[in-house]
Amino acid sequence: MKNHLLLFTLFAITSLSFAKETPEEAAAQEKIRAAIPLGGNFEPKPEEGIFVAAGHSMNVVISRDDGKTWKPVFYGAPGGDHGRWAVWNSVAYTNGVFAIASGWGAPGTIIASTNGENWRHLTGTNRKAPRKDRKLYDMKTTMHFIGVDGSFLMPLEATPDFGKTWYQYSAYGFRDANNERIKVNLAHPSLACGEHNGKKRTIAIGDLGPAVYSDDLGKTWVPMNVKAEPWGEERGAKGIIAKGNMFLILKGNGSQILRSTDGGMTWKAHRLGVERPLSRSFGMSIVGDEFWITGNNGKASKDGITWRDLPDTLMGGRIEASDKGTLISVHRKRHAIHRSEDGGKTWQEVYTFTPDPKAKGGAQGFAGLAFGKVSKVE
Image (cartoon, rainbow, N blue to C red; front, side, top):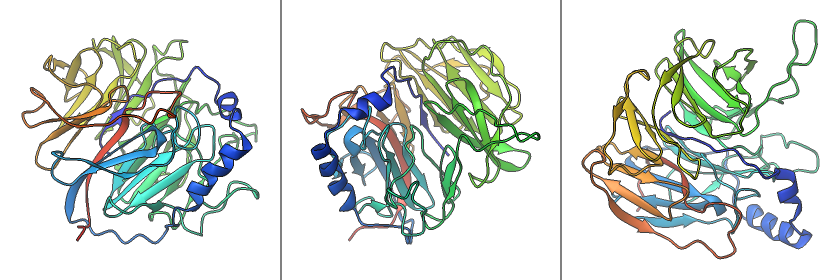
């Protein structure tokens, strides 16, 4: 797993926001989703590297020339922070397949592609619908979606084979040794996959801190009865990122960062010194062998303890590197994509767009970004 953009907390209540949708609007949205072909039978062939970026409205663009030029390849419908087409930190890649998750407070949708041009539902006909009155492609809504070693994961749901098989859990289904229910808080989740005891460990955090972990790429989940301090009571920005056996959590104003090297069982605070932007959207990325954290300024570190200053010219937000070392930067507050060939010292604007006037209720810039190899397009 690579880069992660730090999610910020929603202050609007999702259910109320989604309730404003009229029956006619809902029917129009469902018509769009129904027209997307089903998946579950992807045959990846990694041949050439591409960048994929996405934002609200399921606005998806790609670059096949190392980030020099970009073109739109998919658009759902005008939307914002809530609804069927809300896209947060949800562009994922693994083993020749890109997948993008959308939806917050509405039926979720995950589209996938093996070439970046043609997109289908990730799921096929084998996934169990969440309820009898729901569709096969109705996914759990999530603010974070990742790809690791051939599996796609979100909190409490995963597929190890590109949508053929699904493992689904409920946040209300955990019990202790006395069969008492264990409360798991996965509000506004973020997750990361690193290593622990020779296995892949995925940790998901919610508004109250570390919530659950998985050591089998999402097939099973275990509640985490641990504290990451200082956490604070404010519902502020938060996110988690991992590299090797190091997990980092950033929450609050950016003065400190929490670090764990034992699979998330214990956490220690270290000085960071990244100023929180007014948008509350920190950027958390992995560039080369370093963690990069960006806000109103930027810091980089190999070990999560000692941090160096990044250039003042650095573009903040989500940063991803290609196999040639080119850096691409996106930010949900910017309607543009920027490119750097010198490690982030200088940047060139390579793509801009104007959001649909009907797309309201949230920043319309690109929130998700990933690089990976897919099949060539004739």
